[in-house]
Length: 285
Image (cartoon, rainbow, N blue to C red; front, side, top):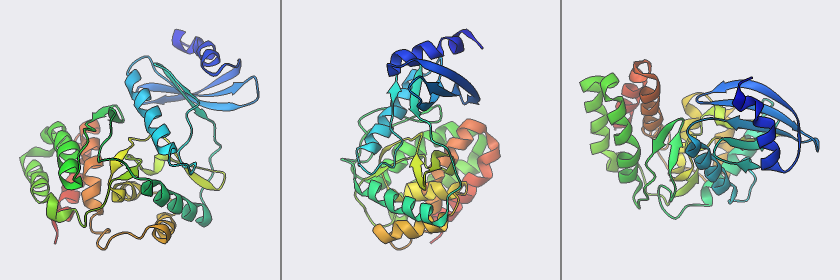
């Protein structure tokens, strides 16, 4: 174990105010290490630890707390955070059954309905290790184009090539007509791919957000992007509480365009074809 790892039990004890009996390494994730720790009072906690990029943990903790203000327990609570360490409760995972998926859909709809004061957020944001421009705005189509699509199109442009860039630029030019009916800002997770839903205790819980005021269809499109389990039951539960506007299925590719551009920026040309397909699907009448 490296020097930083050897100091982790001491740092955890100081953060949590309780001695640490045991720390188990779970491997690496992006630019941090993951751990499961057992505390002297019997609790188990999940720990993310890093020697760089402390602002990422601050943003993650702030996002979880903001989501938690909705009051329905969907976001996993933050137990402690500092410049190197983020501590969350340890939750044993399980596969979701239909009832858990429908409950998650209903609770996600309630979270969205808690709303936000504007699109964006009054704090810095990150998705993976990349910064997000959360400058607030009052119109979702323009905000999404300027704060989400265009910055990542610049990052991904070399891998997309001239024709791919032009295609995405067409989406930007037509965003007003493609975005669907206007909706007020929703309180969204912002990076809700299936890996950021932890199924435990008969429900889904939210982790690792890029939380901001956004469009509720964005979270649902992200769940579809990499195949959330029992997505049909999640959608059914959601529709019980807050029916989606007509045409929402046709707008899924538009909402997936930003995360796909993020993947090109992070991982290169292997995601180029997915961006092109999403842009073309967005432009279909």
